[in-house]
Amino acid sequence: MGLIRSGNTSLTPEDDDALTDYLWPIVSEIMKTAIENNQNLIVEGCYVPFDWRRDFDANYLQSIRFICLVMTDNYILHHFEDIKPHCSDIEHRLYGADCTIESLQGDNQKYLNGFKSAGEDVVMIDDEYPLSGIL
Image 1 (cartoon, one colour):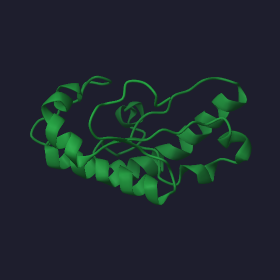
Image 2: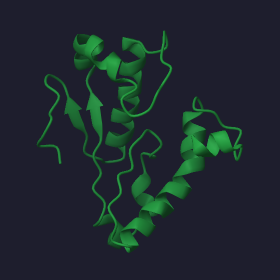
Image 3: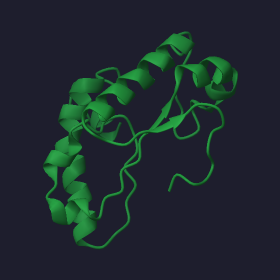
Image 4: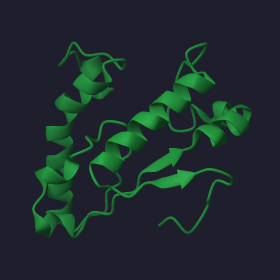
C-alpha cells in the first residue's frame, strides 16, 4: 500500500496480477538481502507468484520455508460466518458485499490450482483450522 499511496504506481489494490508483477522483483530481492544478513522475515500475502522459486538459486532456497494455506470449498461454506469477521485482522479492509462465499471459494481455488501446478505443497484447511503442526 505504501507504493500505491506514494504515487509511485497507478496500480490499485484491485490490480492483483499487475501488483504481483510490480512487487515481486522488489520483494524477492528483500528476501535475498534478509537471507544474506541472516535475518528472519515473513512474506505474507497474495502477491507471491506461483513460480516464485525461479528467482532463487539453491543457496537461497535452502533458507526459505514456503507454506500455502488454502481453505476448501466445504470449509468456507460451513465456516463463512466464522471467517468473515477476521477479514481485517491484519489490516483494516473495507469489505462489504464483495466478500461472499463464492468470492472466497474462487480465490482459494486460484491459489490451490496455481501453487499445485507449480509443484508446491499446499496445506488444506477442511474441517478444523490447525493452530499448530503446520510449521
